[in-house]
Amino acid sequence: MKRIGVLTSGGDAPGMNAAIRSVTRTAIYNGFEMIGFRRGYEGLLEGDVVPLSVSSVGGIIHRGGTILRTARCERFTKPEGVREGLQRLREYDIDALIVIGGDGSFRGAYELHKLGYPVVGIPGTIDNDMAGTDCTIGFDTACNTALQCIEKLRDTASSHERLFLVEVMGRHAGFLAIEAAVAAGAEFVLIPERKFDLDLLCKKLRYARERGKNHSLIIVAEGVMPASELSAQLKDTGGYDARITVLGHIQRGGSPSSFDAVLASRLGGGAIDALVRGEFGVMVGRTTGRITTSPIQIAWEQTKSLDEDMLSLVDILGI
Ligand code: F6P
Image 1 (cartoon, rainbow, N blue to C red):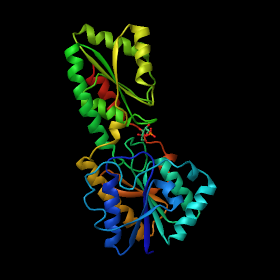
Image 2 (image 1 turned 30 degrees about the vertical axis):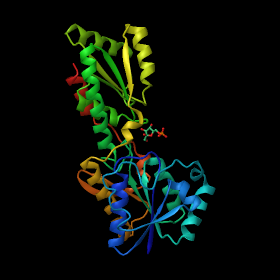
Image 3 (image 1 turned 45 degrees about the vertical axis):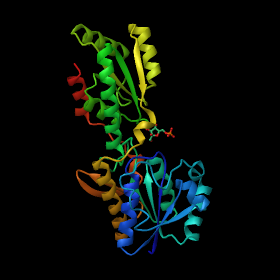
């Protein structure tokens, strides 16, 4: 093995640059050449390559986004697209590919692996919805960003004695919502993993008002429903007049937290170590503090479950 390729794919996440830097420098340290593909699988198919060196990945560890840019590539979800990608990799004499992204990106890598091509996945998504790792790159930073925003909203919610609904990302999972809710001391959290009960929510809101609480914050994961829809339901059922904030893509930007920069650096190194050991078709992860590898398909074949303790914690602390 002489030359290794790397790409970032799917939604970007803070810390992806730190992972690119770590992969590149660890590869070069081990005597390999590194090539980056721009715009994920799209760039792979189009041969949009950039050589990566020790210095070209300098000064990026602290930067949000991804210097390789990213895309969601429809063509790579089809067998013809994957075969074309394999052809491009062979044309460029690339002996193995590292894919940094979420489970959708890993599916593409798995298809290459099934054709006998060496791949390793590095989990990067703010959603943290991937088995095989306790944390994905970008999740911690996104939680901190959400926390900062919610703290600001609390100030104005409290001054005006208002009810605020804050919609957070997370796709079909509630990891980001629950983490932000506990950290921000939000009164209620709605996540896709728990059945939503409108009457119970109205009852809790009434009780909070009765015991003298002058404002409330509800965190709603986008996978449950849009905050606008929840607001309409609260108005119809309980007569509540809520203000809405959708945090949106703000959660995907910004410099990585120290946790994410370290996680990305460790996982980047772990991915090259896996290739050196001849472990292909795997994803690297961080499991109870250690860098581990698992079959790449674990990312979507196994559902990562939310910590039940966290769920009851929001209920208990938000009484
Ligand atoms: O998977 C990351 C994520 O930010 C999700 O939380 C969100 O649902 C989705 O991507 C948004 O994707 P896009 O940037 O394509 O709108």
